[in-house]
Length: 263
Image 1 (cartoon, rainbow, N blue to C red):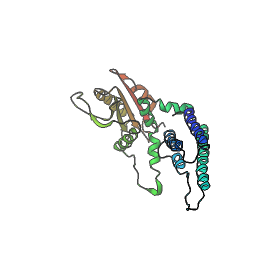
Image 2 (cartoon, rainbow, N blue to C red):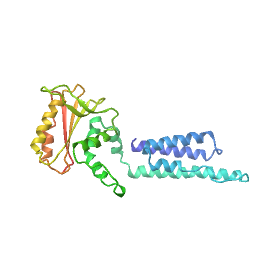
Image 3 (cartoon, helix red, strand yellow):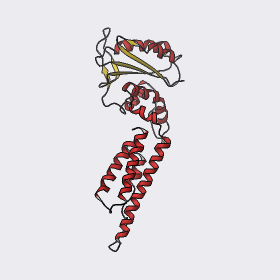
């Protein structure tokens, strides 16, 4: 949802709350407004955020009362809850106005599948680095080899894609069958992952990528091939040059090579 749409929806919720202040306590419109608000807040800010919790924590009734509690006390609690909700919605609007970027919000919605894959690749190193910093030295995943990279990237792919197939076999090429690391079945994108290591030269990385590109493009569901080389130690010399040389179209299949993080 983009910035202007989020502001419009939140403003509408506040306007509806103002109308409830003019209606009797427990009016039928109240339940609809409350549910509409919870749904909208979740859609705007996401599941499990403090925004929704802050809203659902608002009370519209007395926590304690007795048979002698006057009806006015119930009314006061109800209308006080409505006003608290309005104040909170105002805070949400201010947050969106202050911190949301119109262009970035729109571009996230309009990312193509290949752009989504690239975004995950570009941010992979940040995710891997963040995983090292766990509370109270709790165990975490250490990215030590290619399998670790595959495991973490597989999890990240689930953010955008439903059907992620790991280790999909390709038809025989040059007398031997091979397996791609990941196939995005619906999007027809094949992803091959490598991690640099001691003793693996830049020339060898390039040669492996060339061989892989020829092998994997024969897969019947490969309309696009993405090669992700994770190089946290900066072992690859001239990574941008390798990317440029190998990112091309072969036999009608576009190939994109990414070597990250940028050094």
